[in-house]
Length: 228
Image (cartoon, one colour):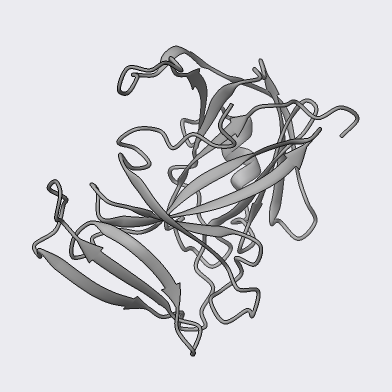
């Protein structure tokens, strides 16, 4: 099975180049993660993988949208900035250019993002780049529509593409928030191996009042960890 599914249309339609963070710390808090080009939707995605019982799996997130045209190549320059080579040759992509070269530079300010998602034996641990707002506990206790968790899979076949199949809504049984308010752990049922588990943290804000830059994520759960 693939280590990770990119949900069609929500997280791209035609992935291209893969570039791992160089570990220098010059491009934000994403050490050990990868950036993935997307041709049709002219954007860059971010990926965080982990290995569970010998199987790679993990989550994908949005990162940079609205680029000039389809992304083909990614590379680091000498200053640690991300160079994005683009073209719409072959088939059309979003954007207003036939080709492009853009540079993404980290300003030094940490954006409010979902940093990583890790699978647990009974749910997931979600780490954020900034502390969550005070009062998020009350919102969750009141069961407000500020969080959506669902899972689905795809037909894995020779034919082109597949719509999501066997999609269900997941129930949050219990949750905890770390003392520094950056790590939110939730017990979820049912967990299903081989399924994509999608998260939508719409409306969540940081301690400083910032909304999540990218509130959606998708975790491909190939193996459920044991004893974790």
